[in-house]
Length: 241
Image (cartoon, rainbow, N blue to C red; front, side):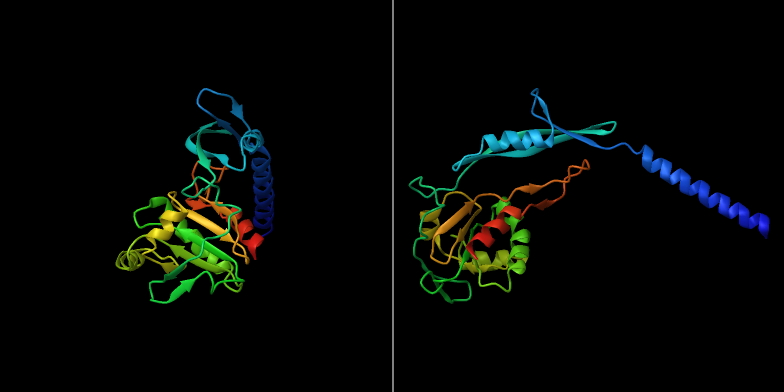
């Protein structure tokens, strides 16, 4: 029994030492971003570049076009999409405006008016049934609604689609906002940009307006996480509570 015991102890320490050595030998993953044939940037350098080009009316959104791994380094190939601050039909920024009055019906036939919502913070999402970015956001928007379920924030969705189209759509896609259909005149007044999410304070002021929720990437692997990053939306909701 003693030789077997010492053999097991010896094996345990050899394995432990080997695992520790493997962990010490594990090289860190270095991450760089490259724009076409342009410079190679770290994440900090990329963030600085984006910050310098962000204004109240415009921001650049990085999009991953590809990824390549060489040894212990990941190279993300990126391009940029310009995203202008959402504006109304007169090209005036929505953020900072008073939300126009409305008196509409939800898909259950209940009247929903801005007057009745006075004193409550409101999140309004504008969408339509064949808008793929709109559909992509819905799961995360549902999670946000759940997070603020015990608050007085009102979550509305508005669309120019008919009630029958919305009811058919909701059989295939879960969207837990209070749903208002047949709102073409109001939607046309507010935006031509979809999806659009407005964050309205208790005084009816549009504090912020967002076109797209940015994608969430796991920069430690070569695979994109199929999720959106709700942090900016959370900050906007907290600002109107």
